[in-house]
Length: 352
Image (cartoon, rainbow, N blue to C red):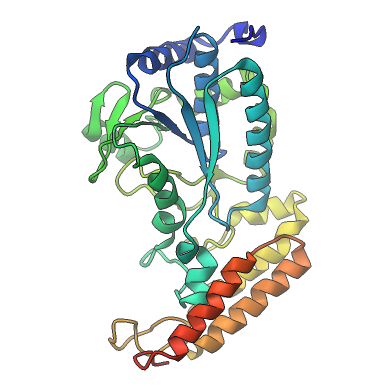
């Protein structure tokens, strides 16, 4: 391992305690580590402390994989920031000889947002029908992690975010820094910053110069311009996206996307046409003229978008893509969408 002078920068007492815990846990066994990264403050502070901890270890016996999930409908400003940060971190960790790998997870083609909405006719998510989080964000990461049932998953979970969350953390705690994973997964969750307050997290980001690739000032500006992040792994029961977050630019779970609106006000003009599309489809979703009168299970009720409705949505999306200059849908997604249209049109049980 190459010597790193920046690694010797003094750290705050709470950070130092977390660093020591990380080193102890890393050396304890050979179980692989996965770190869920969203680009937000908590996962960034966690990754910063993990890199500092590894830089203080003389030899390595296992890799750490940092996973970011690109849903395909992430806020493009945040996506660009994460990809740039990853490339910089790869170089910095390689120079230092740190055993950290960076991986981008993506949803299966069938689960992608526009394949579901425009291809299958899914109405965009609501609080009642919130199909997006698991399919777009949680499952792609779990598919990677669950191949190793004894893996340790590092997450930026913290006490003090809300009374309800604190009760959930307490209920599922195995020890001071561990939470059990709900469901069938046998992976254990390691939370080295669980005792950090929000002020501690920002201090971690601002006062630790190493690694240089995680720029606290730049991240702070993004937070000022937008909001907070969505989860990348189902760390606690019921955890999901909600208001005041930056995440999917297509999100219709919230009534108004305040984060993108605020970013547009702060000079991110390329988001204007995305925001307009999001607001349009939020209203179009409830237009019964373009919704089937039967659900896919055959029951009477508001069903999927009609083929005509789906074609209108695709045209609107391609128009937003052209005006914004941002790639919003992949060619393979359009191909699959048209295949799904044909499947419905040739299905005798499909009734609009």
